[in-house]
Length: 325
Image (tube, rainbow, N blue to C red; front, side, top):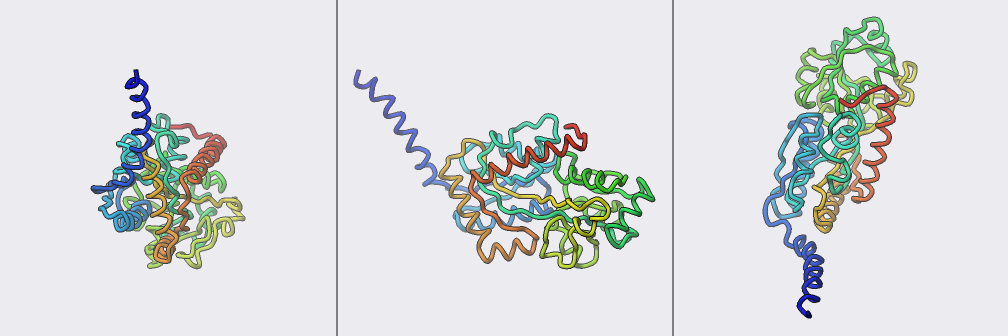
């Protein structure tokens, strides 16, 4: 009888201590960081910065694995279905989490329940980019030209399940313009066509495009929020105020997530190391060069942002009459 009473108690004690013990031993081998977009874009560059710092502080390699496709949902699903042992984490973005749920018909994961949110790494603006040959010097001229030539301009996106695509549709609706949407699997694939004039415009985050704008290979009509790395590029809400963009000021975030069930001590350690890096002088300098505002939020704060954005973008999709595809 005594053994029957003690056995459940022992099991409870072992379960209570196994998480902390596992976290203390972690990591004993390389950690995989899944990036849900191809190499070379803003998401990939942000991930590699964080991976390099985590590798230093954790004492194990953090190996970046790019799994692009379906607006980032393929890579996000791979994270969700991984073992919750701390050895697979992933980059979450405004597109892979709130965006996918709003814009995809059958998302194979729940943006909150399938993951353990770790931290928001940082946020950034959007910039409206163009091939230098587009015959418009500013946003007002661009809208005038687009209206006079409906369907002549085309505009890139990196998937119909991304927030960038949703905001592109919003921008076209606000300005009353008719431009042809051209889909790509990732920003790194869109840029060669944009510079080669196979595509005219692209609403993207400025991380990968800043050097292209500064060198004159692309031009920028405006940004949605203040972007120090693009001095002289006006806010779209100001330069486009007369053509319907007065309140067009969205931003985009990058974060870290782990599979649901990952031990809390491991999540907290990754959060602490990431926050320490993004808020350090080194991190701030590196992020500023990519037009990123460092954050380093707690897991709870990050979860609240995801929930709020799901509600916001659901309302926007409904307003634009967009159905999940």
